[in-house]
Length: 359
Image (tube, rainbow, N blue to C red):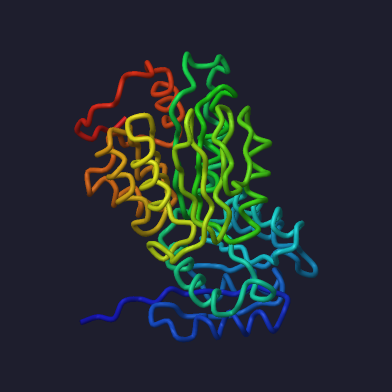
C-alpha cells in the first residue's frame, strides 16, 4: 500500500530556541515533516520557493520584516495555510488576531509562562493537520462584501443564540455578529482559541458591529444585545435563572480534545433553553459541536450549519449534517438573515423539527 504523503511544514521564527522546540514537538508525528526552518521572512521566502511547504508557522515579531507584513506578501503571491505563533503579551495577541483577519487560519501561543511545551505538543500537530486541509481564503473579505442588515430591532428579543467554531472561525463569527442589530437576543460563543487570545478576540468583536461583545465571566447574566465569548481553556455552559439565563465558566476535562468545547455549550443550551434557542455551527476541523447541535435540534431549537463552499474547513459542519443535526445548511453570508428571521418569531412559537435544507 502506498504511504500517505506527509504534511510539509516550514517554521519561521527569529528565536533558535523556538525553532528547535517546534521542530522537536513535531518530530514524533508520522504524518508531519518539518522540511525547514527560517530565522526571518527573507530566508523564509527563498525556502518557500525551494521546499514547497504545505503549511507555514509564522512568528509575529522578527527582524527585517514583521510577520504580518510577510503574511500579506504570502497571501498575495503564494497563498498557503499559515499558523501564527505568538507570545501571550498584549500587543502580540492583538497582532495574531489581525493575522487571522489577513488570511492566517490558526493561532497558537509560544511555549513559556502558562503555556507549556506539553500543551504545545498536544495542540500544534492538530492545528497543522487542520491547516493542511484549510482553504487559503480570507472570510474577512466576505464580511466586507456582505450587505449590511437593517438596524431596526426585531419585534422580540427573547431566546438565545449559541455559536460554535474552530479553524477559520474567528472571521466567520465576525461575519455573523457584525450584521446583527443592537436589540438582538443574547448570544453565546465558543471558538477554539488559546487562553489570553479569547479576550483579545472579544475586544476585536466588540468594535465591529452594534452588539456589545465581552469575554464571559462565571455567573454573568445573558442580556439582549450582548454576546459572550468563552474564555480560552475553560468550558462555558448556560443555565436558566428566571427570567432568563446566565453563563457558567468552569474547568473540566477536554471534550472532543477541546476546552472550551462547542458540545459542552450546545448540550447545556439544549437542556436549559430548548425551543427558545437557535444554534449555529461554523467552520472547523473535527466533530466538536455536532452532537450538541443534534441535542439542540431534538430539544426543538432551530439549528444551522455553514455550507462547504463558505467554510475554511468543513469538518465540524459536515459531521453535524451527517448526523441530521442541521435543520438548515447555509452560506456564511446568509446565516445572519436566518437568525434575524428566527428572532422575529412570536415568543410562544417553538421550531418544529424539519428535514435539513440548503439555503
